Amino acid sequence: MFRGSMVALVTPMHTDGSVDFDSLRQLLEFHIASGTSAIISMGTTGESATLDEKEHCEVIRRTVEMVDNRIPVIAGTGANSTTEAISLTKCAMQAGADACLLVTPYYNKPTQEGLYLHHKMIAESVPIPQILYNVPGRTAVDMLPETVARLAKISNIIGIKEATGDLSRLTQIRELCGDNFDIYSGDDESGIEFMLQGGNGVISVTNNVVPKAMAEMCAAALAGDRAKAEELNQPLTGLHNDLFVEANPIPVKWALLEMGKIPAGIRLPLTPLSEQYHETLRAAMRKAGAL
Image (cartoon, rainbow, N blue to C red; front, side, top):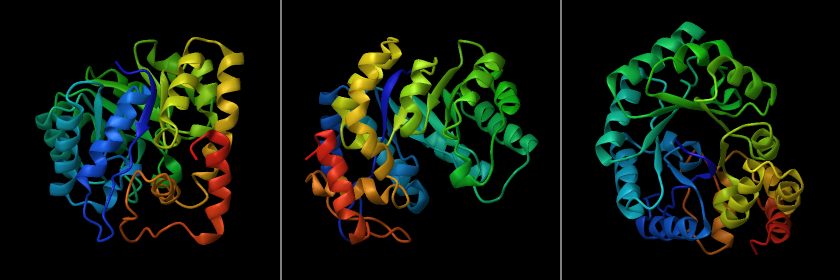
């Protein structure tokens, strides 16, 4: 259903931590004008873990309203409570989101059977298209390809964001789930190779900073033009790495602040980017053409 360069969008905040909807509108227009393929609202990069359920739903609703059907909006609705994930997914469907992205339950470390039953219950409770999200580096649980294959048999589970950085996962999941199941990279550094080897796109943090460049690189990679994709990706390699010098979204929010796109707001327990990394990230932004 979705292809190309999709942005894991930050949630702009005022210095008091409240959501800045004016800046959100400007960011959305920036992405639409730059060729971003889809907006992911309220994912990890959007600080979903520190917004309450009412705020979470409001950001999704306002995002859908502002985008106004110009590109797809995929809402992050995962939680480590199955009932909470169902509630958020219902909220996203009612708001008009095109699909939902559901991270594996974090912290409580379910078994593979627990992961299967969790996502199965959400999919059966809410008919909106759903994308699984596997990021064991943040959740402490790894959804194995065999579990993905079981879930792929459920009609409204349409794909997975695979953020292990392990390219062999693409091959394993494709063999088990077939060509009609979408597989997206959640790792900017390996995203180009992921698409060249048959992935359907990348859900990207880098896209926040250089959406046009990411859109062009992804288009070349999806077309199978390795030489062009590598040429376009080369200036972005610094961002792919340095946007993770501290926990995401600390660096990317600082980068957007440096670009004048958002205020300085970020919610505890996250803190502003440490000064020691400022020049490192500035250099990567200059190389990518963001400054």
